[in-house]
Image 1 (cartoon, helix red, strand yellow):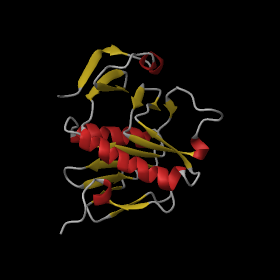
Image 2 (tube, rainbow, N blue to C red):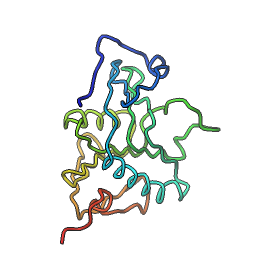
Image 3 (cartoon, rainbow, N blue to C red):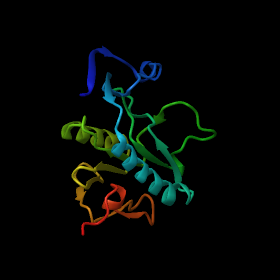
Image 4 (cartoon, helix red, strand yellow):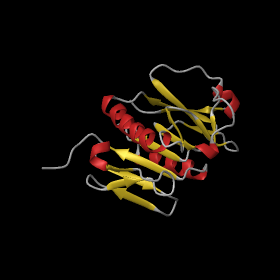
Length: 191
């Protein structure tokens, strides 16, 4: 099933936030247009959980910030864009003051994880990664279980592809975080 876009309806971030959940779809707002993506499958969920676990272990438990799962972030209020990363880490200094609310996050998370699904196109994922960077993300990880790779976006001009045996780090954001790509993607080393 492919993504659906509704270009006739241009929404603001506030209007988007009031939309009811659409069963079986994850909704995002991309430059005012609502985009629906089919619910991910089992492998996608397990890979996202592996990234969530490592971000919690090295980031949240160390008191450096909080990890979020399937949460909307306003990455561009001018051209209304709300992205919903599979997993996100927001550093303590960027967390809202006081108790957390049900509001959308302001700005991109510090670390974003997107797991490739069959419904994703390479160009759509690259657009997402660039939206996150433009919104203030410090690292964007695009995990591709099929290719056994993680593409690491540090900036628009610094992009690196890690393979199975490579170590993923969160340099400059979460000290000490280190994991092999194949372990995060649910596949052990090749024999």
